[in-house]
Every structure is written in structure tokens, then in C-alpha cells.
Length: 136
Image (cartoon, rainbow, N blue to C red; front, side, top):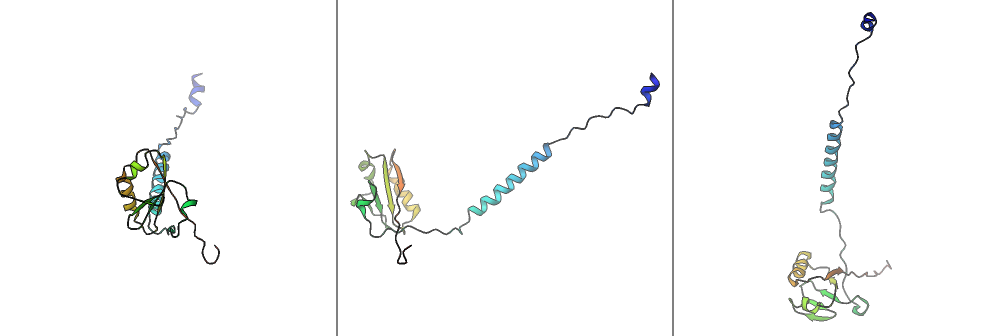
């Protein structure tokens, strides 16, 4: 029997496939993908069409409506309101609808809303669709 065992080829060791290199490659590819797509979406080449806020039909818009002019003047439901008094006027309202002038500075608008310290009041933007001369 010892002769038969010696004629057999030696037993091979099983080769284990290491998948960690493939996982690292996939993770690196995902990182490169998100880096490139994130940098493309943050570019300033996206055109923005601003809303038009001329000739407001206040009776057809949702209430309470806060209108903000380009110079920062505020009107609540058609009545002028002084800065710092909006929170007191909104004490019983859970939602305020904001209609800003198309030339208003977005940063100044956010700063103005932050200064009003509206607590538990949801702010919703309102826009108007203006029919052009060609009917679109």
C-alpha cells in the first residue's frame, strides 16, 4: 500500500480568492463618481427664471400672505408691517405664504426671515404665472 500512495500526486492546497481588492476598487470608483457628479451639479451655469410679482391679485392668493419688495418692505395680507413684528402677528397661524419680488436678494430675504424669529411657523413660497403676449 505504501507504493500506491507514493504514486499519487501530492494533494493541492485550495486557493482562496481574496475579494478585498475588488471591494476597494468599487469603493474608489464610487468616490470618484460622486466627486465628479457633485462638482458638475454645483456649477453656476444652471439658468434660473425668476418669478414675476407684478399686479398681484391678493384676494386669490393663499392667506396669510407676506409680500416682500426688492427693498425689503413687508406687507402682511396687503397691510404694511414693521420689521420685528411678524412673529407677534403670526402667533395663531401655523403657515405663512411668502411672495418675494423677483429682484429681491435671496440672502437678504433669508436674513430677514431669521431676524423675525418665527417659531413653529412653516414658510411656503408662492409664485405667480404670468401669461405672455404670445399666449404661453
